[in-house]
Image (cartoon, rainbow, N blue to C red; front, side, top):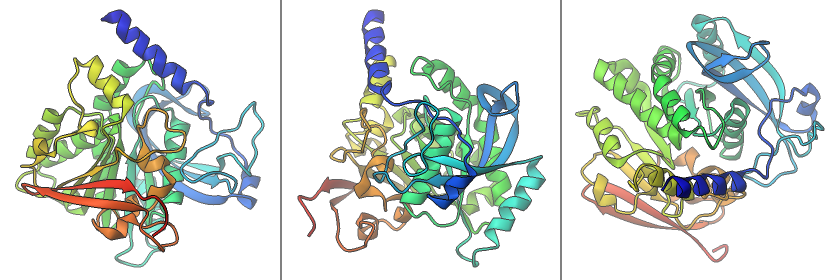
Length: 372
């Protein structure tokens, strides 16, 4: 069995070793070429020894910042390209135009409010993204910038960066780090609830979904209604989360009913491996039978089994990497045809088969043969 798991991990490493790992490359002049997207950052990663970056080590003290990211014009929607061989190209590479660090929570709150008041009341939304397993700081930051840009997500983008080891062999470390980072995410949500934000969308990918649900559970148990009142929806993208654990987490929210959207795929190889490592237990992100969550109010399952992402060899992040799904997150709270339109709002690019099983909505997205 151990040998088999070793072969599985080696297979994963081979699949993921083609592209270079993400790095922060500062290039102010890139603003003249790409479209600049700002992402605020809260992180429980410990700064590197030289103070120039963020490591995979854990920090009980949260660190705060803001990054302006240049999204290059020459790329396929859903993709991220990092500089190769130390030669950044603003036409094709994601680059950091500027970075700013805030001394403490009050300074960050002032910065967040300054951005929110630039928007009219009713449009002051904060989207918090929590990255997944095997992700370094640059990769999580740039992925959030890519999604914010590609989905034309309104409001302010805030990335919560937890201390992933950024290694295929670091699964156990990452799981413990996700649990370690729960209190930090709760602090972030509490701080944002005190801001001028009208509402908050909280999204987590892969192992980040575990972190999201744990933090929301903690907030509910503490009875922090002011925080939950601002939380408009929870979005779980390919969640690497045990189904029974998820049910337990949701039960802590009762009697409050909160929209929880779950993007699943029966062809997610990363979650298949995760289940294998745990003794073949099915993960929530690979849910095949919606009846297993049918009694949970507010849950909407979106089946992406027939959707393919660009460069996503493990089929683990179709929402962010499929060009045809770039409008999904932006309209996910308005479940129905509005979330199935392409950039030009000219045609539905997916068929949506909607089933309701004991109160749980399930949307099965199937690619159409061509424009209708």
